[in-house]
Image 1 (tube, rainbow, N blue to C red):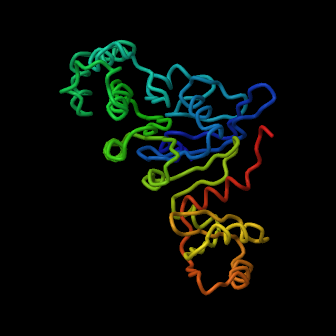
Image 2 (cartoon, one colour; image 1 turned 90 degrees about the vertical axis):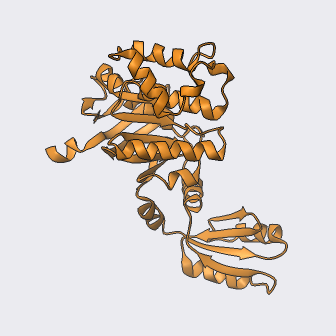
Image 3 (cartoon, one colour; image 1 turned 45 degrees about the horizontal axis):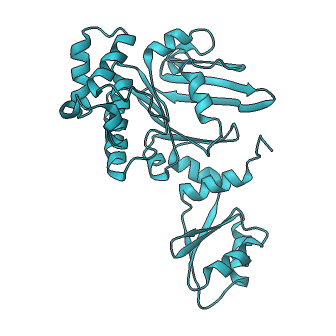
Length: 310
């Protein structure tokens, strides 16, 4: 057991947070291995940011126990903060300072040794050297993202907590960002990252899905898909809007979702689903069974989750 604990960057049990009479994080158990990229998914308001803030020492859990980088999440928050890099959803650096000045300021906060050299290394690592004198407020979303990541890394943390870091940036910047994350993980850095993008979730080593404060599923991509036990068909043809309305009224259909010029029709009872498809048979429509994708699974989980604010 001691060896297992040593291999975990995050190991928490029953972590809970309440605001007033609302439980926004409800008894979550989570373990993340060192050097792992762990995807944390869920809709807005699901409790992801609150959970991350408890991990990095900004909030104290109301219940639960565990460690982050071997430090107790309830009693050793100052130690956790020194070894974690936290990238918030909102850009939080000084827009009237240059990239270099922002990094120098963060290095001062962490009392980074040989600060000038550390700032230069950060600029070079994230490709910011040529823009080092540009004001942060003049940067595009992708370059702000690079600055934020450089700032998170300047004190050489052992864990990165990234809260929707690619929101609002273009596909090229997203891809470059993820290439950098995989390089960092290959070097031993642990990453917990929240995202709404299914293609990004598929690039994580393991996943967890949170809705309304509750952990609904976790595991590798293959495990999450298999555990959902969801059967999906793709249908093409004319007048799909009318067909979708008809199908949604059928018991046994969990979801009917438009994907371009097709519908994905899913349920958990394959035999019942086959009967419904046979009844809805129309020579104008073509039906094909397909593997359920991550988005199919997460929509299904979301539909079954109970809103903690209702």
